[in-house]
Each structure stands twice: as structure tokens, then as C-alpha cells.
Amino acid sequence: MSREFVTVADEVYMLYPEDPGNLNRVKDRPEHQFFKKYGEAMPAGDWHHPGTKQGIYMMGPNAEYLEGRFAASGDPGDMRARMTRALERWTALAKSNGYANSPVPSVKTSLPPGITGSLILKVNLRDLPRGGGDTSGSRIEEVKARTGQWNEFTKWAWNENWIGLPDARSLVPSTGAVENVSATVIERICREVLVDNVRGQAPRWKPEAIKEANLTMRIQSQKGSLTQVEYTGSCLMDSGANSYRAKLYGQSTWNSSSGSFEKFDLVATGMRSGAWQFNQREQDKGPAPMGVSLSLYNP
Image 1 (cartoon, rainbow, N blue to C red):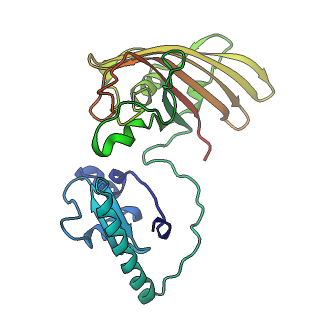
Image 2: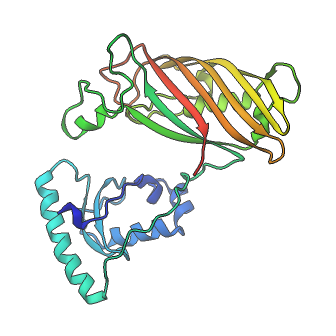
Image 3: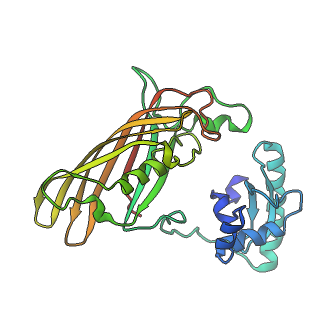
């Protein structure tokens, strides 16, 4: 039955924010209008409004309601019945509207909303092994999971993020000496992406949690328009209940002709501790090793 559907996943908050400010920001965006049109056609009990919109939804190509339900993943039997009804409705809809199957188009990956700047970095986060034979760091790890619908989710031990920095040149030395990367840049990296969302969601660090954040840069070599840069540093974020202390190391290749990086890699490795509300660490508060990598984003 699943072969009859094209499956997609998206962060529903980006499609239909709950707070008035962000809702006003997206109100004219086509993806919001599409999802809103679909939702307004759903039965009231299946469309959660007002409020968050996580769920499983079955839509026609012009946002037609086929089936779906808010917070629906916990009952496989219910979803099978809804998929059956969705296919019946699709058959009638396709016939009446003259729809025909066609290949799914290939499109370039787009960045999440708000990720802008002259330097875009993709962030990957992993647990790291804690000893010989330890499986921490695997994408799927057989750990003691939460009960119910969170069981499989908890085992997924890998995540990704993005960060956009306004001025790529802020990470390029201007002299042959060791220079400090500006506090604004390194503190932003610490706050936004050196967080423990390996298994779930963790918030940005508050400014007062940044106890240490330093990153130096120096030119390793130069050849023509290409400059090789090395980065070293350390950081400590501590909110009392949660912390992450890490060493940082990185290398990059700056092209002065194009005014852009051809390569950029920065890695943070260290010990994290504590648990946030949604990051699935209730059974694993540490201290335990975690790694974060920032690499040049290539769409």
C-alpha cells in the first residue's frame, strides 16, 4: 500500500507556526498556504487548531484532503485504515480532475528558513565512543529507549543543523601572526550549534551560560590566491543542569580571488552532561563524550 504514496517529511512548525509573529511571517508563503488549505478541509477532530500540527497527512497535488490525523503515529491499525480511505478518495479525485501519475521531480536542497550569510556551514552531531567496543557514535544505537512511540526515535543517535555567518572574512587572518576570531563569531557558534541535540531537540545556550569561548586562527601556507588556515580553541557552556566542555580544531582553504572558502572544517570534541526536555537524555545524563563538526555547505 505504501508504494501508492510519495512520502515526505518536514518540520511542521516551519509550515504552520503557533506563535502570531512567525505565523504572520509565513502567511503569504506558498507552502503555508498549501498546508493551511489542506488543514481547513480536514475534520475538526483530526486537525489540531489552534496548536501544534505534528501528524501524518495524506494530500492531493492541490492540497486536497485525502486523509490524515494530528499526532497519528501511535496506532498502525488506524493509519492503515486511513491509507485505504485515502487511496479510495484519490482514485475518485484523479478521475474527476484528470490527474495522472508522473515522475517525482528532482530539486536542489534548500536551506532552512533564517539560514543566511556569506558563509553557510552544515553541522553534524554525534555521540562518541566511551571505551573499547562501545557503540556510541553509531547512527542507530541499541540503547534503553523510552516507551511508546518514542522507542525507535531514541535509538537514532545522529543529527544535523546549519548556521549562517554574515562575513566569511571574519575567519580569515589578516596577518602572519596568530589572531583571535572575534568573540561575536565564536560565541554565536557556541550558543547555536554546540548543543546536545544528537537524539532530539535542545535549545540554544543562553548568553550567561557561555563561560569560555575562544578560537584562534593562523595562516599555515599560501600559494597564489589560496590560503591555508588553521584554527584552535576551546569552549565551556554551563547552565548548571547542563554543560558542554570541548576543544576545537579546524582547517580551511580561503580563495582571495573569489572571496570565499573552498574548504572549511571545524570540529568540537568534549564532554557533555545533563538533559533537556526534548533531547532524550533522561537515561543518559553523562558526563559522556560528544562531537560536533561544522563543514562548508555545498547544496
